[in-house]
Length: 370
Image (cartoon, rainbow, N blue to C red; front, top):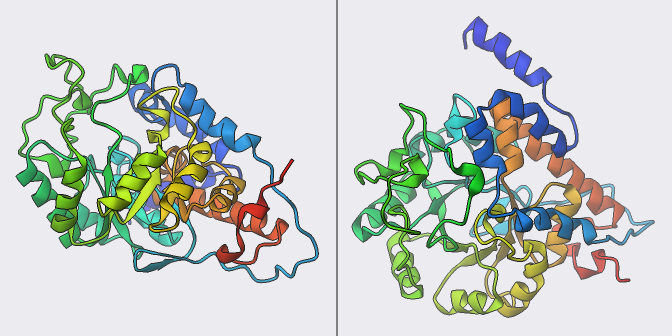
């Protein structure tokens, strides 16, 4: 690393908060263009669901438990053949080079240093094989199914060959929600989604405003159906997870059609506004699936107490999104690492204060009953 880069890295490190994920957004804001900030911050419609994701966590109360020997804590969790150091994972988010010059490589390095799984977006601005070289932790691939099934098959198999241990199919986006905060979005010149080369798509996702297809976008296949899940399982050869499942009936169908896991998600409040908060939807999903496959959760996780509450309600793991992007914008890999470690520290404190020494001991009794 050059001397100039070392000085810049030191300056970035000095700006990093040592606690409280809520501090990252206001510090990252001045480093981002208005377009990039609006893209990551905004939600769908009136942002009711986005706000509710936080409010629902804040309504929950935890039950302290005293005089338990919590001198040793074990946060390890088995998931799809891997033993994870902790249940905090990085959700797939597009265009990391919008937020830091090293993009997804920096995210992978930060995730690797903090022992976190990184789910890589279909809209990655860095090739997956290059990302894989920069982390010791498992990587997953998030898939937006394309109308060209041959292209989709090739993309999935290339991701798996590059080292992805699971494929997360985003199933809640046959069309985009009303994302009013993203109306001015356009990828900067010289930036592209490297794994979509060859599609020649004039998509609103990339800033093209001249579509004549109404609500539909050529980047998403609105005909994608349950029967296609079974086809993709055969194509992938690794666990296939459905991301964006909220209704218990859909959870049951996921099991019936061979999904290996589900992520209870409302896309961070970016798609169907007025949908329920994920932490409120979680218990019914766990009940419907009846522990047959792992259930995970994203949307709204900002505190270690959120992680604990989600696990108490039956989630095997949680994903974070916006906070690590703000960390990336502030200090690249070090910023991502810091965000994960702050949340992990808070989670361990919450475990200790509720008398839970391991993931196995986290159950519904963690939640205070009125």
